[in-house]
Image 1 (spheres, helix red, strand yellow):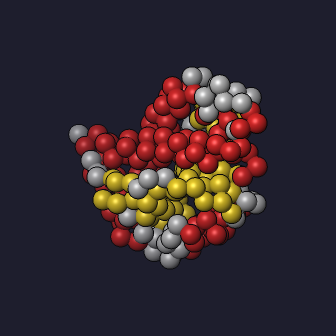
Image 2 (tube, rainbow, N blue to C red):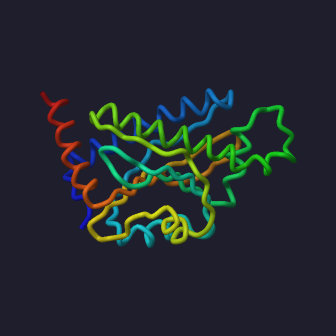
Length: 207
């Protein structure tokens, strides 16, 4: 079944995602020296055995993924998933202005890794601070391919007892809009721990 949150817990998770995304937007804007807007995320919680089908429906075709493995309170993967066809404009926006456009493609992976690192760690650090959890991450790596291959390569748990938390977001940099997913894929034990941690967080803010 994966993680089962009530309405109050879902609202708290959505607020955590919103805080993290706002922090990421500010950090990206500072990095590129211009506005990078990230939409308020909508949140979907999907059992591990349905995550491939859900993501394929939302993001068909080849994808570019920035992946970091999680350690500490939660075990699993944090993934920024973007359609391959629209990742270059976002990467180009993240490059210094003096980089010639013809060189942007050569530096795409490096730029996307930096973008992904900022987005994922902004979200994760916000969650860690507010939930009082310890969350460690590996260095980002870039994967390319369809959703099933990406998830298999980064060892996402697709058992029914695991969960994936999907934050649906839209990036806007200059004149480019890029839709993507921030995916927190947690194993079964971490799914249960997240529910307990969110419950304690709600208890603290309601006191």
